[in-house]
Amino acid sequence: MCRSIKTLRPPAIPEKATEEEVRAAALQYVRKVSGFRAPAAHNQEVFEAAVEAVAEATRDLLDGLQVRGATASASASA
Image (cartoon, rainbow, N blue to C red; front, side):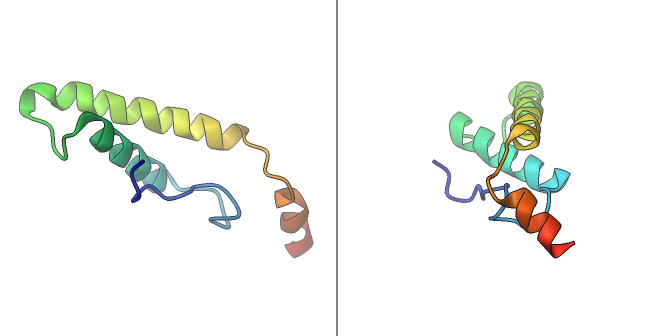
């Protein structure tokens, strides 16, 4: 897999991933899978749609994950 995609869930990052981090991970994934760093003009629309779809799936995944110990750590530090 693409090594430049970083883990976006606790404890790898202490707070919720930003939209910028989610989009950057999605872009790296689409680049890796497509083999294009920057698509040609005739592929731009489908490339961008794929980035948005992956970003949306990533947000859904991160919002739905339950990380053991994350709630206890968060309330202990509050």
